[in-house]
Length: 129
Image 1 (cartoon, helix red, strand yellow):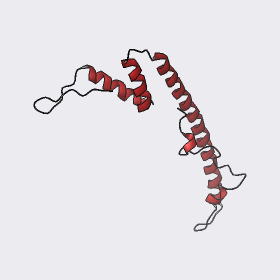
Image 2 (cartoon, rainbow, N blue to C red):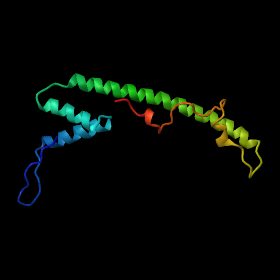
Image 3 (cartoon, rainbow, N blue to C red):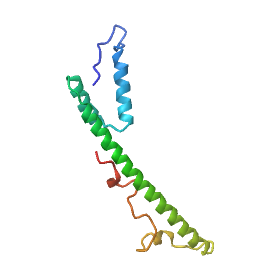
Image 4 (cartoon, one colour):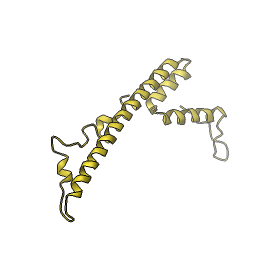
């Protein structure tokens, strides 16, 4: 993506000014969710004289859709965790000190209020690029 200029006598490389703009473009693109592979493909096309603007726009729209879906899943998970904690607080209030109240066991009950959606760490909850 960025060509290395030859080394100077002191061993340093002197990059042209447009390299800074390229690095900033790459860093910002990665920060908003582009993968290195996506970015490499887009930049190859652009550097070859192409106009990948529509592809960039479509990829970005897909990333936004994935984030919005993920946010909906996280809000649902948050609400279910809040409900679980309320249920557990009731169970703990009825349990004498130093006795188990069965919190973990309650997660396996069919009528449990525990999170039924994807865990934020599950493999299927990743973005769908």
